[in-house]
Image 1 (cartoon, rainbow, N blue to C red):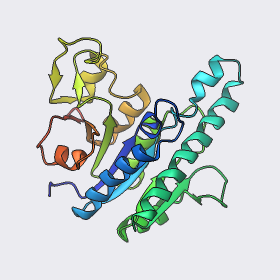
Image 2: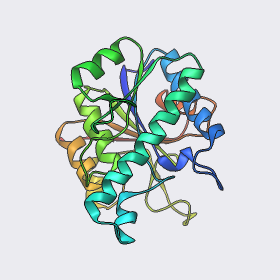
Image 3: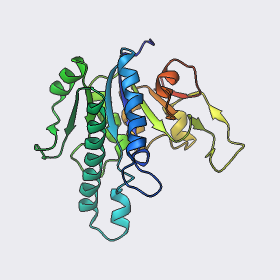
Image 4: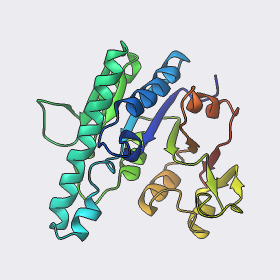
Length: 236
């Protein structure tokens, strides 16, 4: 196992849906298997999820919904994905907890930092659904929760296997970057995460790994350096 013990995995909401369905159980099973593999390898695991398969707050606002209201709607989308992931994980025999900053106690526990840490120490996978605050992206929530639970590493499970000089999906000549600093990411506008998340990780020296989730323990392999990934560290 690497030097990391406690990790937080940020899963894109797009990975929860399919071509013609909002929630694709096969895809959610793939994500759950990745998390189970990490836990079985000895890591303490926490998760944050996006909600892009259902609704993005900024997109709803652009379509005419009042912006603050739109962001709360986006938080509900995150909660739906978190509950779906919890259901699939528990069918695999894994104890989980969903925690959220929203006041929805019938569906999820309120986020309390010490309680979240205790759940993680007991070997449960803790899924953070939302911060409870509008105008925060899921990347920023991931950064915030990583810092609050004293994670050793934040992992962004992306559509691509790391960070490139430009979008590799549209530019076949884009070059993979195996390691860089947050300062470089900001200066070169590499769009690792939104600016608030980058600043939070930089200020609190939270390392980040960006990798692609394809199944077959791909996140675990990235942690071991067996597949392509990008490591981002705080500037000195």
